[in-house]
Image (cartoon, rainbow, N blue to C red; front, side):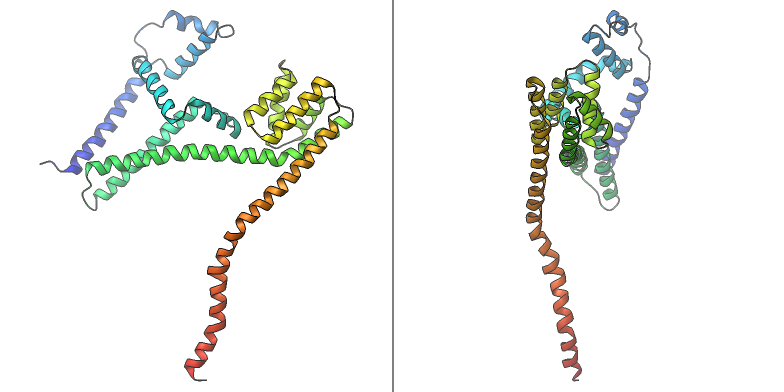
Length: 314
C-alpha cells in the first residue's frame, strides 16, 4: 500500500508540473491568423465600444493559444464566481472610495494570486507537519482550502478597511474645505473658480476629489454633473448635502457662502459628537489595564512590605 504522504507529494508535483506546462504554452504565439474584428479594432477605438472591448480582451489574453482555447470557459467561470462572491458593483464602489487606480479585473487578479499564495502556504504547513507525523490527504486539502479562503477574505477586508479610512479622512477634511470655499465665494469668485482654487490649494483626499471634478469640468462635463458623480461615488452624507447645496445654488443663483459656513459648523459639531461617542465606548476598555494591571500592582506594593516584615519578625 502506497503511503498517503507519497500520494500527497505526487499531487503537489503534478500541480507544479501542470503550472509549468501551462506557462510554457501560454508563452507560445498564436498559430492562426487574427480575425478580421481583431485587425480592425485598433482603428475604431474612438467610435466603437465593441472595438475597445476587443482590444482590451486581446491585451489580456496576450494572443496565446491557451487563452484562445480556454477564453470562453474562463469567462463563464469568472461570471459564476463573481455571482457567488457578490458581483462587481461592491468591489468597484470600494475601489473608488479607497482612491485606488486598480480596476475590478485587476483587483480580482490580485485576489486570485493572493488566494493561490494562501493555498500554497497551507500546503507548506501540511508538508512541515508531515516531517513530524503522517498527514492524511484530506488534511492537505483542508489546509490548502483554509489558507486560500483566509487569503481571499483578507484581501477583501483590506480593501474595505482602506475605503473606510479614506472616507473618514475626507469627512475630517470637509469642514476646512467648506470654509475655504465660503471664503472664496465671499471674495467674489464664481462656484467653478472657487472649487478650482480650493482644489489647487488643498493637499488631502478631498482636494484630490475636487481636482478630479475640475478636470471633468475642463473636459466639458457640467459642474453639477461632476459634483453629483463625486457624491454618488463616495456616498458620504455630509458631502452629499454639500453637493446638493452647490447644485441648488447653481440652478437658482442663490448665495452659497453662508450655507457653506453653516455646513462647516455642523460638520465640526458632528465630529465633536462622534469623538465623544468614541470616548464613551473606549471608557470601559480603559478600565481593563487599571483593574488588571495598576490595581494589583498597587496592592502588591502596599501589602508585600508588611508581609515581609511579619515573616522576618522585625
